[in-house]
Image (cartoon, rainbow, N blue to C red; front, side, top):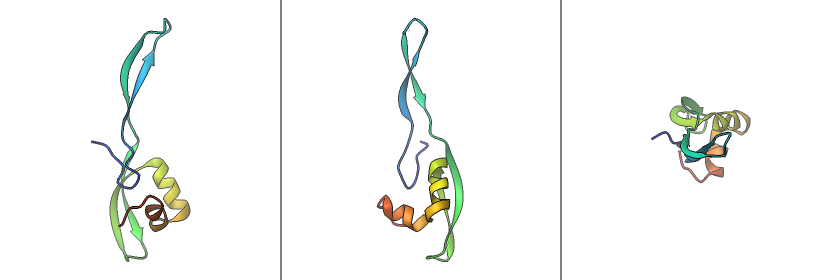
Amino acid sequence: MAKSDITGKRKLLAQNVSHSNIKTKRWQNVNIQSRRVWVPELKRFVTLKLTTRDIRTIDKIGVMAYAKRHGVKL
C-alpha cells in the first residue's frame, strides 16, 4: 500500500460525479516518492517513502524537525 513513512497519509475514497449527478466510488491516490534523505544528526542517509508535500516541507524545515512534529523517531 502506498503510505507516507512520516505522516501516514494514504489513498482516500472519493466519488466521481457525473453531469446527471450520479456518484460512483473511486480512489484518490497520494503522490508517494521514494527518497534518500541526508540526516545531519545521524550523519547518514535514510531512505523514506514520502509524499511530495512532505518533501517540500523537509526542504524548508529539515527532516528531524518534520519527524519530531509528527512524532516519528528516525
